[in-house]
Length: 321
Image (cartoon, rainbow, N blue to C red):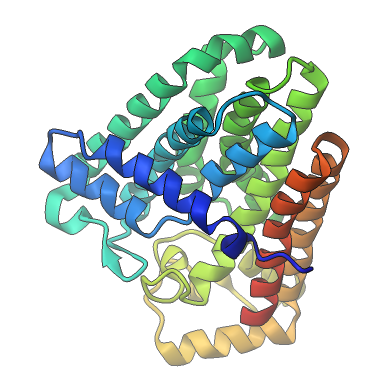
């Protein structure tokens, strides 16, 4: 029977969501609470769900409630990265709703991000020493890179395809690889396995980074079409097109508030030159690499659940492209 990741994990998602909200409702500062809760209201909780099934797939011995707590900590920690993105890219809307950036200002958005980082790491603290002991990774360096990588894409703003891809690997990939490696260390002391799961996180995070660029460009984020391109960021597929069409100049679009007609013509140009399809194939390749890692390391039942995420996203991507 064909699996649907989001339908199959609906009950787990609700459990994680309830626990996340229980934790966040303890926040005393009203504005910080509203900013963080707004992000969580429409979250799909993919990182938390993945964490839950990774631990079980590696035959870990955490109870259901302990896994919900671990998944909650991963979600809260990861929220800080989204809030940084809101701040730097000036996202005033997500999923058609305010991010509170306009209402409360950049300082409060930054404070909310710091709060989410601190709370997330505090809740992950019981597992950090074990992770660093097994992997022999420099703990402070790992955390610093995971956090600082989240802002590097917005600051560097590369324009060449390879540079953009490398940034996506560093930002989206490593930012997911670190927490998933931490989750793996709660289930196994096999160093090679933990590093493989970190690689799975890197490949999956890279696939999602490219996927989210396409979603944003096509207006699937509920904040208008091509919002990140308008803010000055060059998507991978735009840079790819510029290397294949000498008449195409990205500066005509990047950093510009283009009209609906201009956007439509750009979509047609991208499709005519297979730029979106090439990015789609790249996404599939990274998902494939991650899937192979899971197949080697997880038990069959949990592998099938997590692999269905890849299948669900690939089908959705096929439909919107």
